[in-house]
Length: 635
Image (cartoon, rainbow, N blue to C red; front, side, top):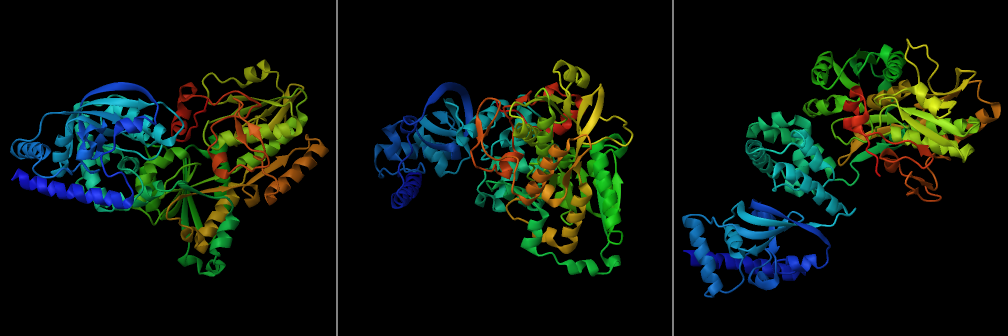
């Protein structure tokens, strides 16, 4: 019987051999010694006895046995040889009692190369077994900025905690995200490993059945996206039928991962109108058949937050602009714990458009968005790639650049303070644009950075210790706050004197977004391979700047001219050569920085004195936002 099996295995080996030769590929097993002759190994690590997935065993350690096998580990030595007899004996052993003796192998970049036991691997691959026990030594390559090496180092961190070695990731950050979703960095016990492995098996079958192998991502990426939507505990409890249905519902989350640029940036509402052609005749349809309900979800009460108050003004503006077409409702105090219930409540009141004013609502909203594709959910955040929830923000860095221009012109001692709140995406661009703007009018200007959300924050002590009179602070005041410490101001005779106030015109943003929805452009701009992020600026009217009479007339005229040029696109804040604090060149001469690079800034420019604070240095109320959208400074 085993001789017949060898003949069949031999056919498979010869077929693979011919296919490789025809395609110009090496027809035998890859040899680790050859691979490592071109690579630099940092160290070796004894992994002990490991259950190795057979699909990850791809070659042999030395040249000695490579010519006995085709590239698929099937034999290519003729029947009747000593090799064929030994192979057949192992086949008998597998059928009668199963091969139990472990092989010896090296692991290199999540692939295994056999030192001893090639025929055992060949037999088990022929019988389509899942895994084989192996005594493994890991060869660790020297770390570099190469993306494949970085992916491997992330995998090793994941493997150290979980002891799971049957997952691969093709996107940086996915392995760490999966650890976070499944409970953090605590080492897994055998029960947790078994639960995870069982779910992975059921998920993989459903995912492959739906065509997952056709997507250019790894199963680890897809699994992470799935758990990110539904939650780990809920996913574990799903029966096979629900897993299958849920994969179908959230398929676009997998598709988003396939693109190099997963976030499509819409930089100006005019782009939508030109590309899609707004059907303005829709506005003349009877209001009774078209009236929409838009819900605004706030993390805090507008009376207690300048950020929320700005959006509340936008909501009121929206109602006044579309009295016959839009009805709005608002809910305050929405957080991670109650957002799902809040979404259900507002949808029960007829809301078909929902604006979430807080990135911390995003995670728990994903499942709701997947299950209600007819409801348009938008989250006010930046640099988030989810297909089912679009995000929106404004290019405040344009106004901050102009504020910096004015601050630089008015700073008598070249020292300027910038007080920021959350170290998140978008904020870093604001700080850097302000700093570059200050050097536009004062090459000696230094920006002293402080964070209002840091533990022990003391504005007065910070300003006094650094001898600063010009300060960029929060953008506006809350309704009940009498302080003048907002926007750009200076201390004169011991009192704050306002100079400039950057404006978030959220009413304009919401007006143009509703116009897009009513006219059908929102629906038609759907991008199959990317999530959409609206990032509008001064050209769209959603950002502006107001100068007080305390700004000298000449400085004010200069700022107004610059603002006009920014709106026309003739001037951009991030243009030309500039460097980070460590001296690294971040942009070339006569080159405009791309929107993606601006959005993903994780460094401070060289005239900023201060740092991007680590999470542990922040007050507790700031941590949930920063954990979701925070930026870690690259040293």
